[in-house]
Image (cartoon, rainbow, N blue to C red; front, side, top):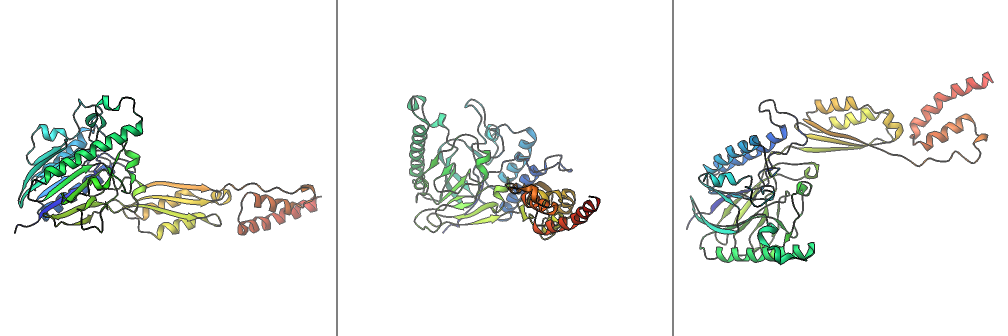
Length: 414
């Protein structure tokens, strides 16, 4: 009996994301670009040390459709390294597609140069890929383009919703045809796709998405004619058929690196799959992605908000982290808050980038001073004013005590 085929599945690299970064002194690149490239290096090291037989990259190599030459060079170096380990299937995602059909995609160059062991999967088809542990039937389903799947005459006069429904119907039909063709192969079969599947939990990809999305029903890919479904496009790692033995694992590997604070708590990594016909095992392999940390504090009643914010920083391990602080303040506590010492504390704690120190200043509705303020003493007027501006009780008492000597002096002068 042959050994299971060892498959490495990753997706959504997005080289070129530069938010929350500075300049890396060694490379001259954005420190965030370096983060994304390092994650791909970790994938390559794992593939080599675990003797991968097949590598599937499920789409979205770059942040933009027209990446700069430096980003292309760095990505190409790593594709070359992967291709020397095992055959590489490089699916075309929505970020890889050109604005018009006549132009080349950002990854088409690998196909044009006929780079050995690399298949740029830009069409809906099934190929038999030879690996060190036997042949694998690979079905490719790149990002669905309306211009490619629907004739203009078909959608004339249709609403947006009707066009989306027609596109979904066409894509489901194509996926069924791919499964039927894969079913003629006796060995293991894998489908790789770059699209949204109904029921998937979205990540931060919505913020950088190019084009309008159409969801494919889960049943269209949870097909027992496949042994594993390797998906890209959604950044949150998840298995859409968890707990089911009657269908293959339908898995989004998720992105390799965090893009923003919307992915703060999401593990990042790739999938390692041991695949054989009707018996696939897989696991998620986490990577050391850049930590994003949010620190929150309610300092509205704090007499020394700066000190309290510093203590909050010192209570957390922020080494290598991108950090934001969200502080609740009143106008009074904000006036006592000094941001610079807090930023210095963040630097001492090892934060590599301070995304923001956001001050949420409470603006209470002003209380009326009373129907007849003329009859109030100076102290009573001051107290009502302090209450109306949201000064906390402890601070209010301090100010009133300090004001007493002023009021007594005014009385003597009168």
